[in-house]
Image 1 (cartoon, rainbow, N blue to C red):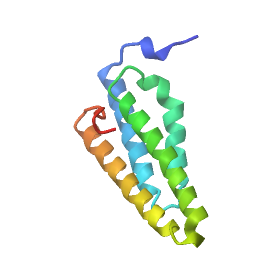
Image 2: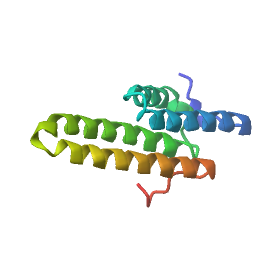
Image 3: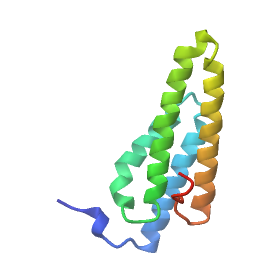
Image 4: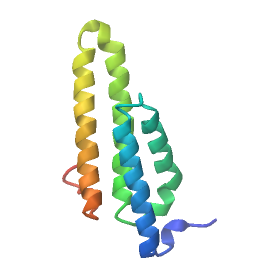
Length: 121
């Protein structure tokens, strides 16, 4: 079995993975305009390339993005189910604000070439 995580990452490989990570943040942001499909595509990329970022500072970003996706999907589902009860709009607003916060924090940390801090999570 080829274990990619034990390989030393070259600066070029890290730059490529950083661009991929930025693309996932962009797809998460585009979710608001394109009804959720980019969110699912972004998490698919996260799972597809997850082994390549293991052991690098980008691993924290992939974990951050995956958690953002699953919690956002759960928030959207709860909003849909509870919309008729009158609290769906409230839960939708909380989900959107939380998602914008996570995308913003992640993108700024990525641009600074820093992992997501454990104290932020």
